[in-house]
Image (cartoon, rainbow, N blue to C red; front, side, top):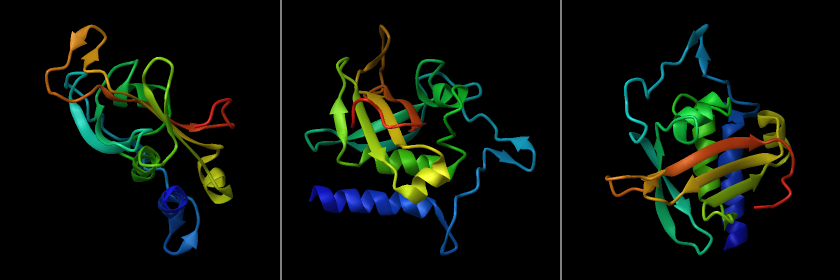
Length: 170
């Protein structure tokens, strides 16, 4: 079952590298005709949920993991500020997050946050200029000491292309 799921995840990511049936890298829509994409979090609270993902925990349980507007420490704002990508404006980056979160390669880090990591095949590594992709989430129901009142966990903390094989995998 794990190998079948791994193959499906790899196929989904590979589809991000396939355009019109040819193996090529997807365009980067972060800048369209010289104009930067609008910030979907403009004027919204850091707890505002932009989208939700389904995520597989190490025990196989599926959970909902929101992507919140966030701030410099987590969420959309953090991902964009760090230059990792744009999960709202770039469909290939969003697909990387989606497929990584359902991959059978997750662990709970020492601080209690789940982490998902996938290793790219050669074409994916060429397209995304890295070893693999990593998402770190939080199942906490608070931003620091401020409780969340919407019943959802904090969600996606960060997501990025892993440049080299990490010392711990997944």
